[in-house]
Amino acid sequence: GEDVEQSLFLSVREGDSSVINCTYTDSSSTYLYWYKQEPGAGLQLLTYIFSNMDMKQDQRLTVLLNKKDKHLSLRIADTQTGDSAIYFCAVLEGGSYIPTFGRGTSLIVHP
Amino acid sequence: ETGVTQTPRHLVMGMTNKKSLKCEQHLGHNAMYWYKQSAKKPLELMFVYNFKEQTENNSVPSRFSPECPNSSHLFLHLHTLQPEDSALYLCASSLTSGGVANTGELFFGEGSRLTVL
Image 1 (cartoon, rainbow over the protein chains, first blue to last red):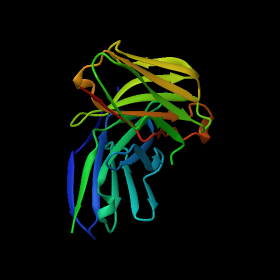
Image 2: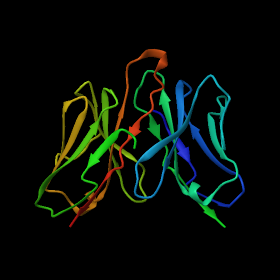
Image 3: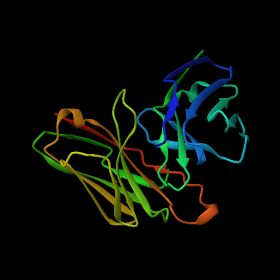
Image 4: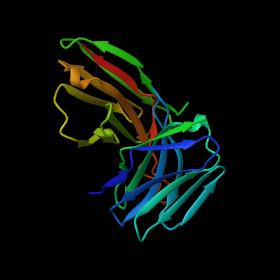
C-alpha cells in the first residue's frame, strides 16, 4: 500500500516563507492533497493537485509536484501567526477512493 | 462550516458507560469515514462505509461499533471503553462516483473529543 512521509515539525519566523515537504511511494497516485488542522478542529482541505500537473498556485500557497522523485511540497509565502497549525499531506492511489495521510507537520510561526 | 456535523463535540464517559457519537452530512456524498486521532500518533482510519455498506474495518476492537443507516448519517457506538481510547474522533465524507469531475477529497467534521475515565 501507499506510504506517505512528512517531517513532524517546522519552525519559521513571521513574514518568511514556509516549505512543508512530503514523499510518497505509489507511482499510480492520482490526486495529492494538503489539509490544515487548527487546534481542536477537524482537517480542512487547503489545496490539491492532480498528478499530471507540476505546480499549482493559489494566493500565498504554491504546491510543487515532482512525480519522478515522488515528492510533494507546500510553500506558504509571507507566513503569518494564523498559519500555525498541523499540515497533512494525503495521496490518493489510482483505483482507490480512500486517501493515505501522512503523520502531519506542525508549523510553528514565531514573531 | 464544512458540511459535516459531529455531535457531541465533547464527551466524558466512564469505562462501563454506553454512548454514541453521531455524524451527519448533507453534501450528497456516498462514503463516510471514522478516524481516530490520538496525541503523538498518526491519523488512524477505523471504518469506511460506501453506499451504506462497510468496506473497511481496520482491526478495530469490538467495543467500537459503527452504524450507517443511510448515506447521510454515521454513528459510532461506544461501550466498555478503556482510558487509551481517549482521543479526537473525526468523521469525514466523500464522493466516490462522478468520474473525472470528482477530485476525491474528504470533507471532515470538527471532531468529537472523547475522554474515558
